[in-house]
Image 1: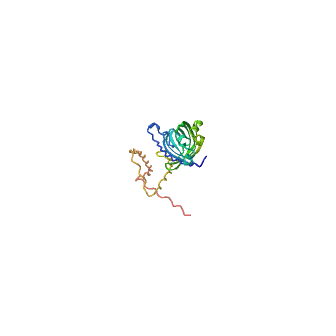
Image 2: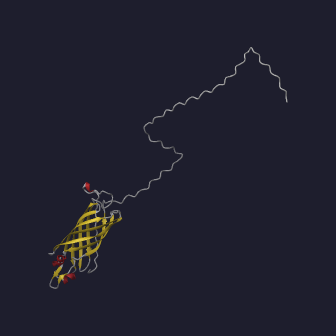
Image 3: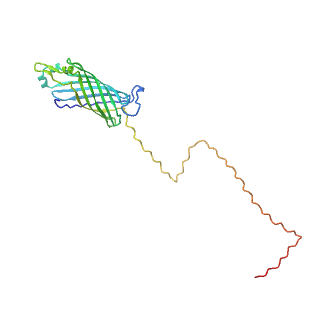
Length: 276
């Protein structure tokens, strides 16, 4: 590397879980499900004298299945040469490619659709158009990444990207200078490259975290002095008819001795026994 590159990309992603078609609703309650639409807007800058770059792009990704998104992005990168570089290579801005337009179809797979941490992998390949007679070359890109929830609908997108352009011979010819003072390739824009990917993701209308289960409320303590609550009104219940008890048996009467006839005198008392 010739110098220190500082790249910063801000991506604003809008997710909606209710697409226009009724049949495209997610079939579960986790994020990054089927039917999620993710538009994106990005801006980047690289300061690396004597050649600096400014790039911007836009795109969108649609999840056709749970965790699987198909995307399309268009970006434009402009090369800016320093004054000393243009003095060393007169007319360089008219010979080599200074505008790089990339059209990149991609596939993205979120293999763990967590609410707070969702890792993914992505990959794609597409054409690259070069000005100043550079024509068209190809480019592939791939890498891992993860969405990390910061709070509410805000996520941090962290990843690593790998890419290269092909065919290398045609791509190198688009950045070769042929002038009165020097001749040959002056910019290496076609070799294998890699770098970090940092983005800020704001999700509108996406899936929320699962609701926390609330503990069951304890029943209020019973009060002895309170009358029990009357049961709710309902249909009248039949009153059971109690059978009358059997009457108690009448007590048996002992017959009295028959009285003596009045014509017969009472018997005389017998002799008194002597005392001991």
